[in-house]
Image (cartoon, rainbow, N blue to C red; front, side, top):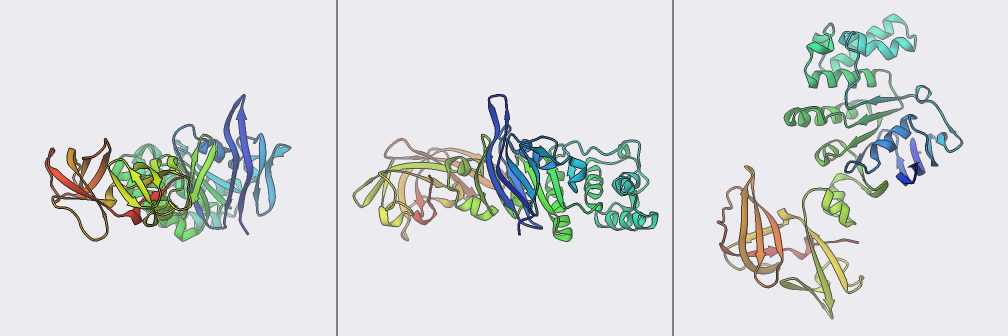
Length: 354
């Protein structure tokens, strides 16, 4: 039975629908990220789950019990949830140990139980040696670990995280992504994570709900979301891609600069005459000679190139027509701008877009 269910959830501010008819079922122990650009409604959705904002339509349920509806909402302190904010919100006048103990003290647990839980969680987040430090004496990553420990130690039914890594530098963000996932795997707390960073969502989540303009565009596991996006917004927001549009002409689909048999393209036979496909840059291959092996061979030239350390980012100009396609190639695959070249496209890796 799903532990957290959003049914037609909506929130309007005046005439603006910040959240518009969101349906989402999150299973017990599942880690789900709400991913999208600023203003898409993800934080408003999270704050409604927490009980800070009341919905103007729909309901929020936990284990079948309605927590929020248009008729009223259970206050945040009675929901059994923990929330971690972007600013961490740890008490500056309390030590690490006192911060972690705060929620347990409010629940009036026995002193020995509080000590046992604090010792255990600080060991898990590798902060035992800093138990007597104050927040001002900690790094950003250490403060984030304190916030995680304080949220988890009370054993919440649901853990909510609102862009918790946005204040950290790039290297520390990467480290903390895996730390958050490690803690989830250890405690199996049902988790809702809000972020605009696709790498965070991909590294931490069991499933990702991509939001845009208050609606969920697609919900899937990270691999499916990346390799089989169903809508143009999802394909463009999750990583980089090339969009190629074509028209079916009998048994052939004609794109700008190349053609392919319709039966080699997923969805071409079932769609109307206008077709749109997503092709990831890393699924395209540059070569100096015409490629073989059943791929689509497209003549053209290297129009631009950028070296990004781990790979080259090329812009390939198709010879016939005006198409320009982004190509990601290994660092050793070097081609100068202006080089006449060929592009290999595997039709099996062209993903149809609604």
